[in-house]
Image 1: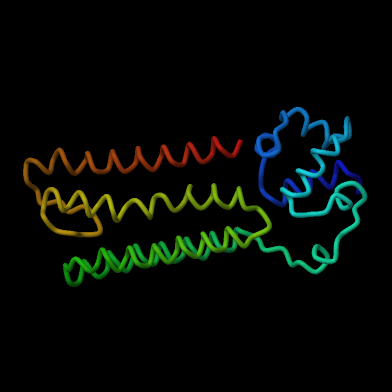
Image 2 (image 1 turned 45 degrees about the vertical axis):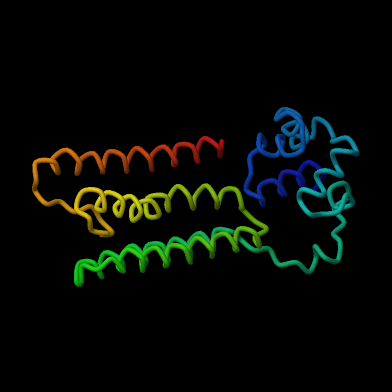
Length: 205
């Protein structure tokens, strides 16, 4: 494995594109592409920046010599925390809807939001501690979880405005006003979440 391969492997392990790496270290995407295709080598100042960014030594980038810290460090994949956090958020959504269906109490919404807060905390802590696929995991987390995380708050606001109840899903009472507000809720919800997903995918290119 040569310097070009090591730079490429470090970038992929971090889960970022060539363009994102270029932005982080202050070069063009073409420069990163040339480094990874062996057309050129980074200047010494860029090698230092790369070593700081990837948390490796300059010897590793240039010669493949791992420090004792690198050799003993176990990689932590950020995708693990995406799955755990998503499961907690989904449980929160289901629990909230189930409690409201059975009891019609405002605590149903609160209980769901507590689960989701814990889910977001798990992902945040995991993202900070992870060493692999961080950026891709972040994009995946928001692409999936924005649909869960925004549903309860938007439903709570909708119901508080039109029915004065804090329900975790939009209530339909059959009134004439509801014929406008109910479809409007779903339109706003889908457009809002869809925009976040599109932005997340665009940032990943």
